[in-house]
Image (cartoon, rainbow, N blue to C red; front, side):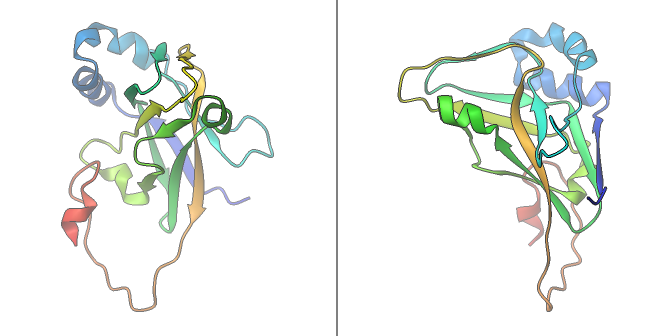
Length: 171
């Protein structure tokens, strides 16, 4: 196995800003939540995915969506990408889905204006009326580091200037 990445927490000030932006009515909880953030980790030595954990208790009725500021950023070597998926069991039981289907975290996102803060937006797409309930610290998504290549004639020299969703403006 190649060791090509590491997870870190974003700064307290970045997390506070993002938490209050996401959960305006629960703004006072941010510091307690920040202190309890767990870095992603693999469950077993044979696991490919790194589990991401909920930052607080949550309930999602069928059709409901939540955007979770994870408090996590990922440094990785160039030539790698972190792909985020829902955990398989939650997808199977609740049709839990990421709103962007697969989250793509580029290596240069680490240096973005928002410190590379990874947000994960999920929807309970259950068609069986099942409510999803999770306690703080439970695994809900998984990230896989994947090596990628580029074309022989690729001459891209643009550098990331913004945060989430900013690379489309550099083309």
